Image (cartoon, rainbow, N blue to C red):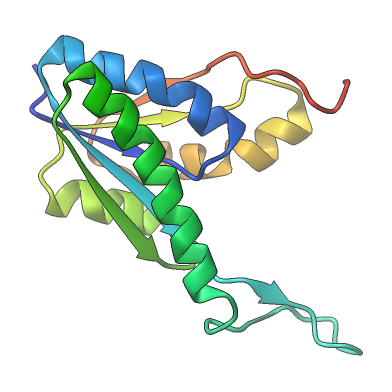
Length: 154
């Protein structure tokens, strides 16, 4: 059915909860899994200035280390399930563009992403990349809405 599935992860609770389902789906399809994490630049607010500025050198190594941890966590689940898995980390300010670009370059035939099904603000914050990928991807996107424990008490 699907030969190669892309699973982007940002290490969030939503992505972590979706990872086991993504791996199981890949296993049931006999698919290879490509796990991607896009490390985003850190934004700084200079004092006295109302604009945001980006310092691409600020914490890049730490951001890439965290991105690698995110993909390796999913790779461990895939390995335990016997699913062929490769990982990729990229540093970029445009996660959606990277997700779609990697899926096209790597000839993935499906993108599997987690999305929050919670309250409006959480959906807005946690699901924005998923919505962007849904809007611009020429490749089919499967959205998983895993149950995630609410740590805010709301």
